[in-house]
Every structure is written in structure tokens, then in C-alpha cells.
Image 1 (cartoon, rainbow, N blue to C red):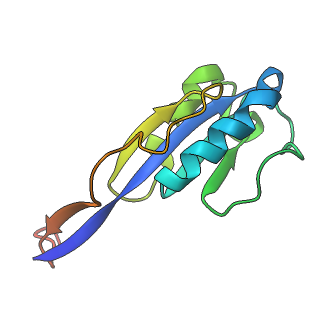
Image 2 (image 1 turned 120 degrees about the vertical axis):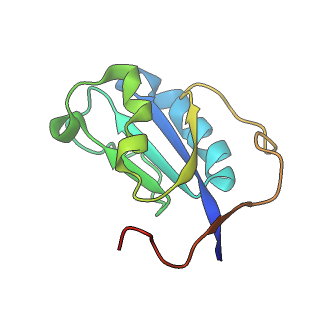
Length: 115
């Protein structure tokens, strides 16, 4: 059996009227997740205020359709491997201890019974 660490992945949807709060929400979430899928509702291009961070995966409606707030769960379809998925709001400053506990481990067989 191989042991694998399960990633902590977040999803958030935001819109232009939340430009003043989303930066704070992202800043407080990023240290707690391995990846953040950010759905940019009502945007036609990436906003200049979006933090430049490789953990952030920006998602535009032109590619995924107008999902509104439901865009925060789009990452559940896009993330390529098993994960713990958390949904976040774009107007909350999250405390540094939003998630408690050590990295989550999962045991997998080193070969698939289906191969």
C-alpha cells in the first residue's frame, strides 16, 4: 500500500461588487489550502486586483457559463485527484485555524485492480 496525503482544496465565487472584500478572504484562506478554485462571476477577464499566487485557479464565466454563487463548487469537477473540498465566502476574513488537524493521509494499493 502507498500512503498519500490528501490535498485541502477550496472553492470560492466572487463578483465585481465584492472587489473590496475578496482580497482579504483570499489572503486568509491561502495558507490553509493547497489549491483555491476562484469562480469570477460577471467578469470578462481576470481582475488586476487578483493576487498572483500559483495556488489560485481563476475560472471565468466565458469558459464555464454563468454559475453565480454555485461557481464555488466547480472545483469539485475540475480537481484531478481526491481531496477534501471546502467552500468559502468572499466576504469573510477567515481565522488562521479554520481547519484543525494534521495532513490527511489515505492508503491506496500500489496497483489498480482495473488495470
